Amino acid sequence: MRILITNDDGIEASGIIRLAHAAREFGEVWVVAPESQRSAASHSITLHNEIDIYPYPDFPVEGVHAYSCSGTPGDCVRVGSLSVMPAKPDIVLSGINFGYNVASDIQYSATAGAAFEASFQEYHAIALSEGCNGHEVTDKYIKDILKKLIDTPLDPGFIHNVNFPDCPLGECQGILYDRKVSRGMFYKDHYNVVEELDDGGIRYVVEGVYSPEAEQDTDFHAILNNYVSVGVVNNVGY
Figure 1: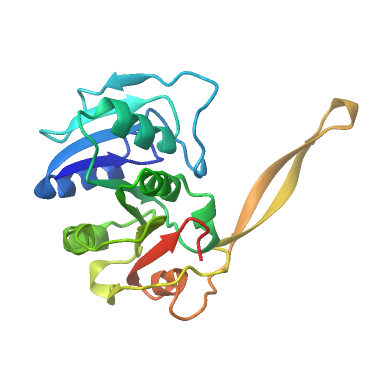
Figure 2: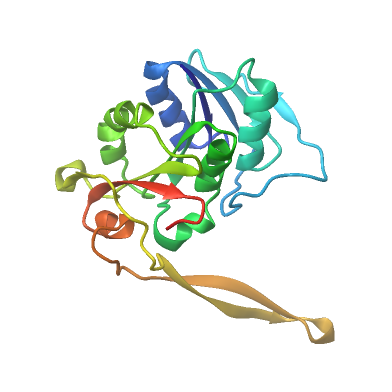
């Protein structure tokens, strides 16, 4: 099996390294990932500028073909699968993202965006995300989940979306499949004035307020209750 891995946290992020370690068990691994942080880039691609690809010999997983990319995660999937790899991938893995991609965050997520690009290119795609602190749950369950999902077919336009809870392993309640996308917001945003600028301009900065409320049977509800959430999502999220 040929596996293409990308992310939106950059090629040096710990999540992509751990994902590549796990993926080696399932086949030949290629990594094409952004040279630096690209979070919240959604499904954007580069159309009017060049995309630079460089071999990345310092990738710390033996046997992985690794390249850095100047573009977005969506670009990584496109140029990686269509030009860098000698043949198209059997599956694309996007992640492991630093922070959850549940509820309304999915529409902004470049982790999900890269997976949607893979689906658009007719590849099987899995997006994976986790909390920002402990990773015990991820490391415990990731191979078992990959083993199950790699052979689970998807309709065109759909991806698997996996989120691992940010809790100690002993507090994890297990895995919940078939989770719907919550229509809530992980963070409810507002904008604060930073500075009044010349000529009547105003400079703002976003501030998010954590909102731990979610509907039953949804991805966000699963995470709030210390379950691994696994769902199938289409390109409009619901």
